[in-house]
Length: 291
Image 1: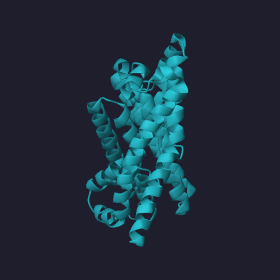
Image 2: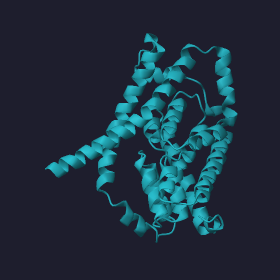
Image 3: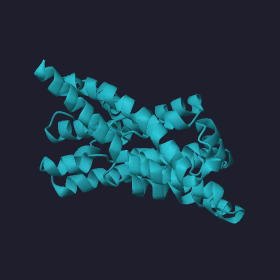
Image 4: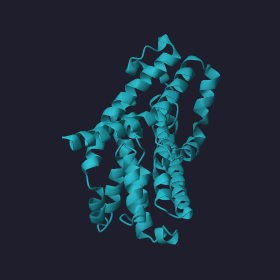
């Protein structure tokens, strides 16, 4: 009984800590959106909308920062149509979560870390710009107020209270999912599963990408650790780390009411990640870059 209680407490603690890490990002995101809606004039709104052309490049660069909060922030911005779909995709593909810390902790050369970051940056920018080019004018219409109405946040009561309402609402949702995922990840043996996948062409990259889609920072830890210990190939590692966007997908599905759009977005994220992983494993590109 004491051992079971200790394991339960461990799962709960990690779920709470994982959730608390993104709370500041969520609050700042919703505060910025509220200020944009309540304070910005028409001229500022047009400027924000027009800046979207460079969005994928900016989003990819910011996504490389070693944290998972920015993907959640980007998802919130997209739900309010403040950023483009291509920008959101760039952020998700570039997001590194715990990758850098794990790689350094496992003693990987700094050149390897920088190479992986460069691959993620280039992939994120290319896919993001391609999506924006394909969608162009249909990509974005600012409607921050629609998000407020959907959340029932009583925005007329002030930007700070409204932003806090949004933050608490989403954080509670993320906490519940983190608790469920934490229990699964705590008892699952990912290393043995990954070793078996390593012998399967394409399926290995696909399953690694599926692990990356798990909306929890633990996914990037698992993928990065398994690669550092020689269990995953370079391509499978890239597939898992490209698809991994922390809790970004959770926030997207919670805040963006267009479920078909969310599912298509998730599929494109998955497909792009698998494609890049296969490219590196089956063309010799990984060996050429010494990954």
